[in-house]
Image (cartoon, rainbow, N blue to C red; front, side):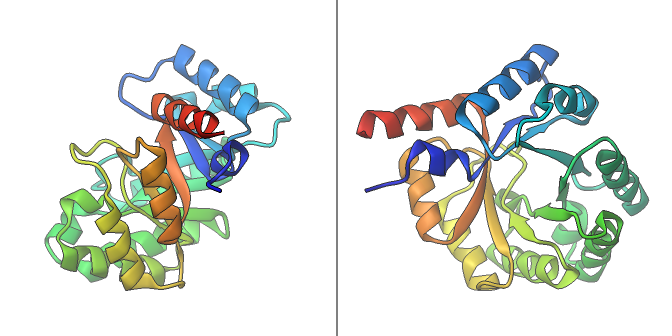
Length: 225
């Protein structure tokens, strides 16, 4: 027996984080999150306050972002963004690794950047986005290593803004690099139930999936019975 709708929803950050996400998209997102009991939602920063109001007393985590989507902001900007998201009611933060540092192999600088946001979060759950489709296998391994060392709770595959999707091979590389030291969140181009279940088997414990793909996967689960 495969995953149920409830089990799936309890692993999914249900998101509307595209550049064209509208207020109506956010309202629909929260309504559907309540209906299917998604564990969390993610919206663009300008709609965090609205999302918080719409969630109300529902048991839905509100995620905030720092350095999204490029990761190349100065560290103090990421720190300010993380603190602002927390002050606005977010209880989890997804930050983007400094991709420019990673591609330059300035791994110490990338780690310092992450550590500063870890400190700003002060115990709030932090997921660090590696944007794996931009990375070589070596950079994926090093990225996982520094994210774990910096004290983050999750290494996350992508923002969903990169042109190519996260793959099963990416998850295998990440799991080999981190073992059980921190958790893995998969996001970016995850569109089928088969992909979700394979990634779960490989050690993924959270997903970031947009509305259309998440509802499609729920339809696959329901069709399977």
